[in-house]
Amino acid sequence: MPCGSNMRAVYPTFLLCAYGFFSNLRPLEPFLTPYLMGPDKNLTETQVVNEIYPIWTYSYLVLLFPIFLATDYLCYKPVLILQATSLLVTYVMLLKAQGLVVMQLLEFFFGLATASDIAYYAYIYSVVEPGHYQRVTGYCRSVTLFGSAAGSLTGQLLLSVAKVQLLHLVIITLASFSVAFFAPWFLPMPKGSLFFHKSSGEGQEKPRSNSAALLEKVEDSETKVPLTAQCASTVRSLEAAGHSRGFVDVLRMLSTDFLQCYKCRPLLAWSLWWALATCGYFQVINYAQPLWEKIRPSHHNEIYNGYVETISTLLGALAALLVSCLPVCWALWGELTLCILSMLMAVCVFVMDMLKNIWLCYCAYVLFRTTYMLLITVATYQIAATLSMQRYALVFGVNTFMALLLQTLLTLVVVDSAGLGLDVITQFFIYCCYFAAISLVFFLAGLSKLASRKRSEQAVPATGRAETESDSPPISATRSCL
Image (cartoon, rainbow, N blue to C red; front, side):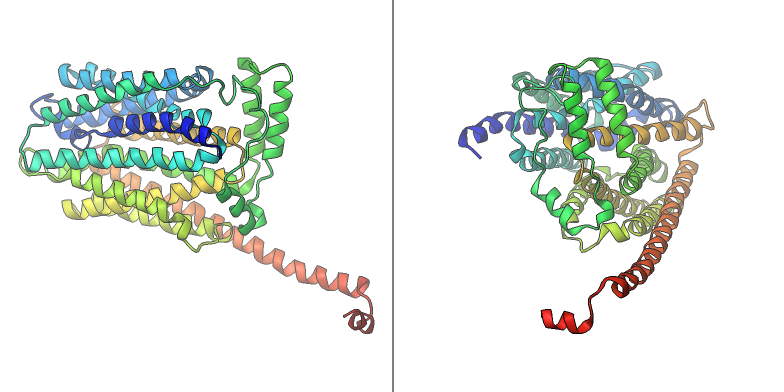
């Protein structure tokens, strides 16, 4: 890779890493529920759990697709600035505002910030060469995880050692967001984007990473998704009219790609787990703090939420890094692995909910998050390895949207006061049953796949023998050739 290309990648990567670190350095986040239910905001558990937190789910769902299109149409940078602004507004309101309605509006702005997260990871691919994708993605992802862990640890140490008030953690988090706010303004503006604006040469299929090529060689042929060539032809047909595409053209291309992608059984299986498990994962992490508050009230006891979030984040990152070392043939054992580990997640949620011991609850939460991070990394890799960049952006977006749609339905029925409005203990019992149901789905899928494979293996020798009897030369002739 030329030196000049390296230098062009350093500046935006550094700014993105700085933005990712400071925007995820949130000392208050592990203690948000105690803060809202404490003397600073004086909200009740029902208001926080059943009336405020659901707004984030609804706003995230409603904003995800418009933000997805706006991110590409505006070429990423303006959406990054919008995200930075939304985070600032969220914590200014958290610091200054009072009342239920204002806190619900705050959750809307936080949903806007969360939906805009797609711009953070999409931007770097528009300004660096494909040869740098793997490295800069690793930098950006690791620095956000490190920022999140550092924020949780900082908040816990300030509470436990320095004995600061929760209000001070809001101020420190707001200061971190203020630093992050300036980074996107100095990023270079991309010359093109993935769907709406194509810079010269972008229409050609970009080379995939070495890891993707390696996966295609070692995995079972059933996992190979011959979609990249189809994608390239679709893109070229739309580009015939010019580099800038209209809204209708983009929607037509996305719908065509959507139908072609999800016809593939392995991709559909991993995507199904992604959507189902991510829905449950969001629910568990969103409402874990109210559960901890129920088991060990913060106004009577010292809490250790920050340590738990730090450990779970770091172990989750480590699990993601170890995926490449696992000696698992995902083509053969993928469904059954998803079954077993989904059941483990169900057991973790059961322990959190039923045993009413804060230390067991903390440990189960750490194991739950680590297991999810391991599996979602495998799912990401399995889906991305054989898709073009245009298509895995689409598939990941659709999977996330489906997860949010399921989460919205679950929230509306189980959590929201307009639905059943269940208390947090009952909610977690339902989440336990939810993950058990996911495990059952993939157990049946795994058995079906193994049975199908066994039948095909039995059919192959019979076919081979028939061909040998009819087409093979005499044994003597064969030996003479040797």
